[in-house]
Image (cartoon, rainbow over all chains, first blue to last red; front, side, top):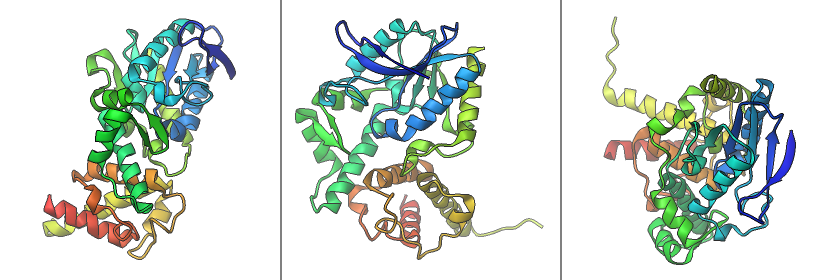
Amino acid sequence: MLTGMWPPSPGEKEYALGFDCQRTRRILVIPALFDEATKLRHFTVEVMRRLDTMGIDSMLPDLPGTNESATPLEKQTLTGWQAAMHAAAKHFRATHVLAIRGGALLADLGMPTILYAPVPGSGQLRAMLRAQVIADSEAARGTTRDALLESGRKNGLRLAGYCLGPAMIAELEDAQPPQDGAATTIPQSELGGGGLWLRAEAGHDPAQADVLANRIAEQLA
Amino acid sequence: MATNLPAPTEQAEEIDLVLRQVLADVLGLSAERIAELDAESGLFGHLPELDSMAVAGLLTELEDRLDIIIEDDDVDGEMLETFGSLLAFVTRKRADG
């Protein structure tokens, strides 16, 4: 496993983790978004580890504003992230894309693409708004999803601990994963267990990682 | 001999099963542990890992799997306190739907 830097735009630098042996099959892994990125980080890296043993390179870049990134999350947009993923694909000379969950919203990069359990932007937003309403209600602050969304569209919003700008919220409301013809989807039901993004505490499931890595390798064969 | 259980019982069993399955996914519990849950088993406020984000995921997954809609107003500490109270809530929602 290697770490390195890549330029999301000229002069900028972000961190990436990868298994890069200059092999012919090279997957750009677009991580899940927000809270799900944390829940799925271990699983994602374990899948990459398995792909490595199958002779497949994979690179997992930080989305600007997340993980080790020094840029603020509230300035990020889905459009900006997609441009950054284009730059990452070019920098790493990716031949394929694997997008995890909400990462599918950034996966339209014009190359063979696999989506793992993709979620539309509205679904991503719904869970975060609901978490915020529950947290607010625990703190005796009465809010509703509609009121939060309304204010978020104008001023941005700190949602479940993530500072999202108004443009990000607006884009999440409408964003959809690439259509079936443009990408291959591996649904959670094929992995034989519950999605690890549902876990209250980040966990791992080696059996699910085996299945997903094998399914990805089949697609690349 | 074909069993001919009344539909409400079948549905109650299905809802119980789905709820246990979703809780297993959220809490990362084994089938044995999840089978031990009874009406009095404490959930929100009893399990520190069950925070607002996890509850949001739990409710969203229940909506998808049971084809129900859970409103913000439905969600309070009492409804989420025990396995029994959450089961009663989703059963009622399913009947309303």
